[in-house]
Image (tube, rainbow, N blue to C red; front, side, top):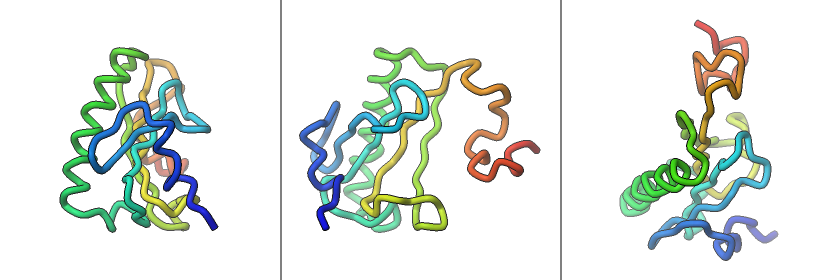
Length: 121
């Protein structure tokens, strides 16, 4: 079975030596990016120190791209690691999700919303 992220770099919006970013096929908000290692890694915890450095650099570049292109008011950054956490493609990928004032009624709790009844506190 072919990994869809092992061949998706041809659609890169931005990239560096070890990572590339593409538009999410099912975006949560306009501009939602996926940052993906060029080497096949199962999840965040399988990344090397060099890959982590390139990921951090591409996150900053992705933020600049999104600010210029979409003008968001905030960001969520996240990984799904393992099936129980919602990972469906088992090639590491980081979600860089631009957020906009009013895109949800009550944003307090942010990523805690992955378990909806735990978001509010």
